Length: 306
Length: 270
Image 1 (cartoon, rainbow over the protein chains, first blue to last red):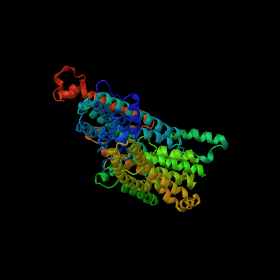
Image 2: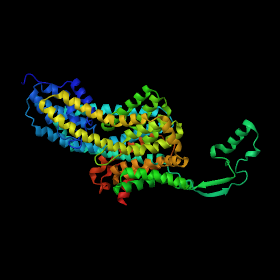
Image 3: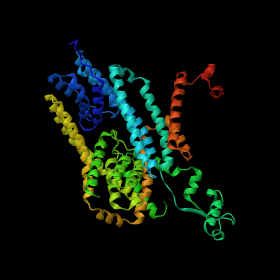
């Protein structure tokens, strides 16, 4: 036994990583990602256990409950690969030991993956792409797709390799401060970007007119006194001076929104977000909040408030 | 739309449905799904713009534990089809966005159905594992993934079966105030996704970062990339400074001369 060791090659490990992209494919209410986990391990298990009886035991052992963030399963897969390899080569690794490592890792890792990928990286890359796409720029979706998948594939491969090389020793690092630091750093950056996104992209515009004040003569462009044709347009643009010069009409209309913008730009959007947060904390379903906002949007528009 | 285009749309829908559960390549994100449907139907610009709008709304939607997020896949695929079939061009985007939301809810129920079916599938996998037949486990895994694909592909095919004249008729019946109002609602509904994310991440420590981000965003010259760089740098600085000074406990730092923070020393002595 000892002279004929079965080693997982780089090709095998790449194959496992490729398979692991279907991790959530058979997500179910009973054991969650168990089917996808077994599917991910199959390229390795087939090689490690040529004996049908051993393979059957290995498959059953890998069909137990598992659930974590789909990308952070990779380091767990790496560690399990190392353990299965040891076991196949005769080291007495018990099923409980493998199971213990998996369960011990999946909780903390899910706690890292959600804030880092779903709440920080995807909103940032998504907002970057979306802000370009809204103006019709095809580069928006392309950038989103390319950047995201490069980050994802690099992460899947290197964390799986890291787990495989570290073996079960990785569980010692788990309790250390590193993971917690990454999570906290991601939360900080995420909150920073969220603050910016709310200011830029939550659109609430109040239309009611607060005041109409006449603009003093020579404070506005007198359209009927401009020269005709292109000369007139030039003259008007010079007088207007990108909004810094004369006004466009003889009365200055101030809407409620103009007043709010002088105070704090984006205040209405911020307050709306806080209201949503409060409602969510009160266990109101996000779906009802979304429908409610659409109803309010239509009603307030009909009443001339928005 | 000709037959080839319809097949391609259903194929895109299938990809989006698979990704809706896998969450790997992101074909289910509106930015990608709407763009692809726009591409195959010859309305690339419309697809891109709708994708951008819906992406802003869906930024905070994620498949996490107990928090139920609306389903982005069905929302993007169906609203893109309606936008293309409706033939209203850019004007139709507000309405398409509004229609997307109830569809996102419908998609949620469809996911739940497939996830329940998957429970039966993993029991079949158990039986195959006992026999040691790894090939059948692979096959059943793919069947489960394909079911998730069909979850979006079938509704998309049904939508395509409605003649575009009928879709146009329905959209034409919609009064101007309603579609304007829905566009306004679409601008505000973005807040829900952000609120979901904030509720998950917020702690005392990170609120100042939120405040700085909000204040800096008012400077329109700063692009999103610039804002991202500022946010990242601040988080790194915070963690680095904490690692340096954190072990002193913050109480009697003024006693040792080398804190490197003269202002802090003065305040401590004060």
